[in-house]
Length: 174
Image (cartoon, rainbow, N blue to C red):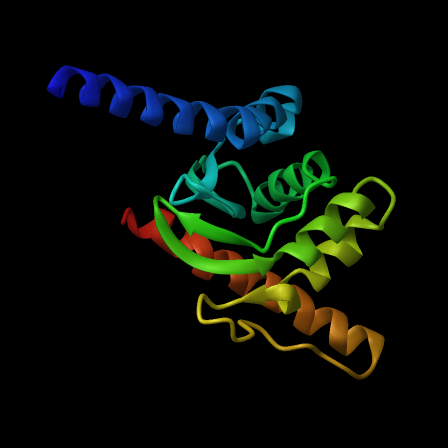
């Protein structure tokens, strides 16, 4: 009886990990391998708690020193393009297993549908205003006013977003 339970448990765990791999991680691996600009960025992606298909965890594991925040953003946008036909509630943005921020699923889907046609500068500068703290509150402001002033504040927010997400931890080694 114990052996039967053990076999069933191992089989269930194998199925869950395979499902996560083929649904998400395989896409990340293909994105990194197919675009030389992504070399040096290590990301692990899985469903939340490995069993919630409505929530994706996008977990940065490492970023080499010659990579910029724009490179990391590109990997995230390329994943959204690969998964654009799917519906998700949210995407948790983590660093080394620690959740930091989240995106709403409808924004993630929209960026995937627009990838390759929308101006990437627009997508990147509007990214922070679509980033949420884990409690659901806005992590960054939505700016209004003159184009140059708004653009400057949005780019500052993009830089701050990446710092809070993973750059500070990479620099400090934690």
